[in-house]
Image (cartoon, rainbow, N blue to C red; front, side):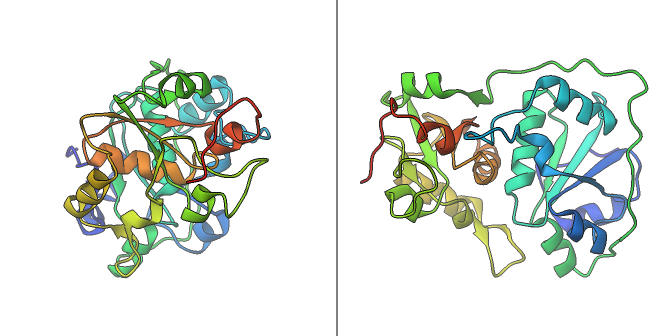
Length: 272
């Protein structure tokens, strides 16, 4: 089994998709999966990655629930996971972040996901596939470094060694669109909407990384700082987390995100 790059092109993987050594994970709407997916891909409901508990619905579910999911998927230490979605990488990024949390780093993101696969004219499948679950439950080596909580953000948002990356829309960032009790953003956070990293004219593939790196550097997001990314529920910031990894950033994600921060009255906000 070949070791694949983190950013994997559809044409690179097409000759390998029949190899059972690879676990292909399709995230997104079940209806899309039923119509078309990469051959041998297994559908994962993105809602299994979040607690769903309001107001901060994007926080993690209980560890036991995630361990059950990954054991049901048959993820062993040597399993190479190929992750994609049908929306440009947000749910795929969230899944990759979750893999980082359980200490599983053998994965690749299929650039552009289903859109890129279809655009390349590659074979598709519409049959449901099931994973071969682990007969003996794997004990995962949970990591704390990929995730930060509200207390951590409160303690570090003013530090010159940290930078906050808000992956929401400019309207949400400025408070013109409010999706929580309060509008705005975490003070000192900079706004680079997640879709800015996607080429909508090229099958939702990631734009050239050198260009993105320069754009982020102007905002103060670079390898010199620890980056904390967030959105509303750590769905969209799943993509910015993935993008940060591709750029070599020391990046973490705040899963509580704006839905937790802005539905409290004891957290500072900014509107500029």
